[in-house]
Amino acid sequence: MNTLYKRSSLTQAVECEGEWVIIHVSHDTITKLNDTAGSLWAMLNKSMTVNQLVALASSHNMPLTEVAAADIEMLLEQLVHIGLVEKW
Image (cartoon, rainbow, N blue to C red; front, side, top):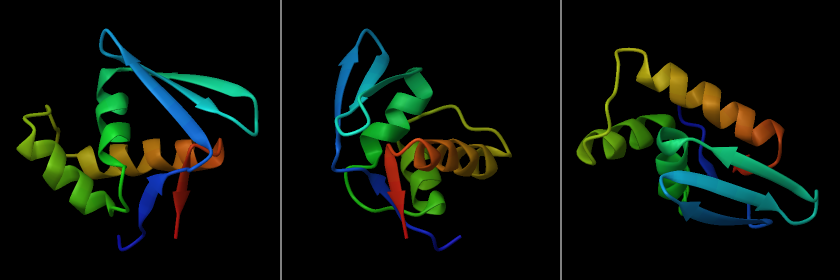
């Protein structure tokens, strides 16, 4: 899992009452994230691997399960698919 993920520079985000709203400026789309996904989004201000995100989330007392890495990677791939996150 050496793939790096980072927020797309073509997005703007706002957090309100534990939910995140992300606007993709060139696609003219709006995506709403729940608290957990939003917290992960906030951590992607710099390039990170899935393992780094899991470690950072653990240090922020986010509730993680045994399948956290797989869940986080699935979320990131969905965000890549809709253009909110870049990977390389």
